[in-house]
Length: 270
Ligand code: NAP
Image (cartoon, rainbow, N blue to C red; front, side, top):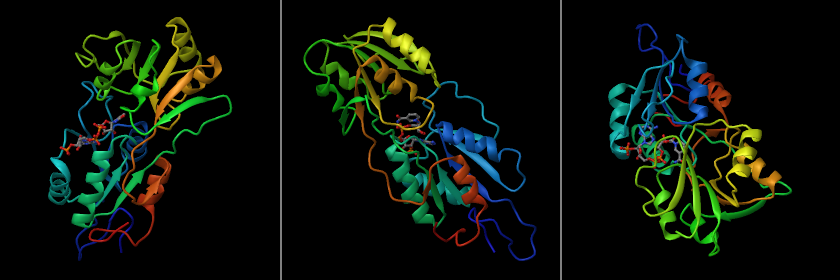
């Protein structure tokens, strides 16, 4: 008999707790590890990409760094005896989600994704939706703007194509030389942010447009509400298409899945 996490008995041996690999880097992953930490019925490892120099300490063993593509991830799952994988990565982290789907399929280990719903346009929102971060650049137009850029660090360089704008760039890590030759002000901060703080920041910086990713979730939504209340346009990149796998919307749903009954288990699909 196995549960969704692949827990079970082998012959007369004592049952071993299922080994759960959580691919993280999000508030959902942190919420999930907090719920599972200390439980004797799960053996949890959190995996982070290593993008943040000082990630928040988490109450479960944490490994940091890539696996070496889908094949490397499949090898690691097999070698470590992982019995279920939870893809709790960011909705814009498309590569690791694709790798997780392919690796779990290859080794026959169940996979669950935590997929938070995107933000939906509300009355009063002035959104220009784009299909990617790169497509946000032409959407800013020719006239100089004061742009609040909240897209993380990795794709910043595309904005060098629009040097007429001034940029307020908010990131967790220093942007380094990602935006050579641009008028930019760096703001180092980690969410969550409050509506009052977001409104004050946008007012004081004289922001004329917000550029962001449609990441969903509550932690960074106040900037969207602030823009609405201040009557500012938002250029918003829609998330990439992710592989179709079993999914839930939040950490609670993942705990329910882990505690659920068959049909999942090593060698079987979710
Ligand atoms: P990505 O493009 O999907 O992944 C690039 C590579 O990074 C992957 O192929 C993998 O390397 C490695 N990787 C990503 N997530 C990993 C994890 N949790 N554990 C181990 N390796 C991981 O991802 P990304 O957009 O660079 O994001 C990196 C991480 O930051 C993700 O974990 C994500 O949850 C978090 N994050 C991303 C965003 C965003 O906007 N993209 C925002 C907030 C947080 P190998 O192929 O070598 O295994």
